Length: 151
Image (cartoon, rainbow, N blue to C red; front, top):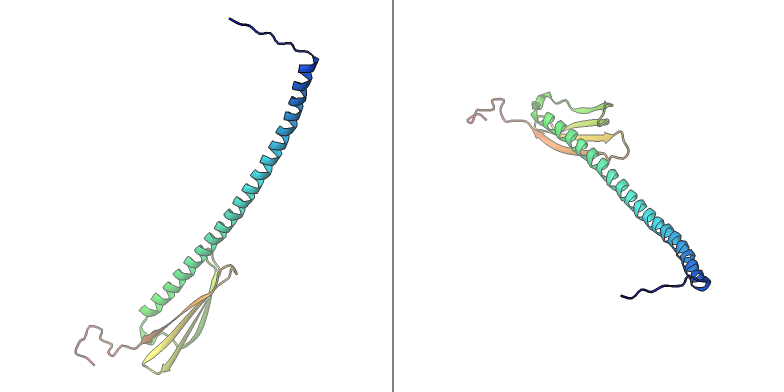
């Protein structure tokens, strides 16, 4: 068995102290660089999160707008032809979750034959885009819906 003894003199000790001092300064630089890299990564993730949340808000607004449009089309398609007045009517809805203005324009180019209906939805929130739908209603040939021999 061999045992070695080292001398810890001034020459050997001074080099290890200097190396430790240099290493301590290097560790601080490493920590600072790591914090800068972490900050850059977190800020880019924050920008991504903001973009995704804005897209979600717009998608929600589009879904509400499409629901309101479909509701109006279904309501006007289910209303009897003679009960739809010619002209323009406007409704303002100020309640959450989707405050908006509806403008319904009904024109009758050929009397008692067909009506052209335009529904315009304008959201109060400028982040959402307005949208419209136009469709044509025709008058039934008979008022007896189930009659197949009537003209």
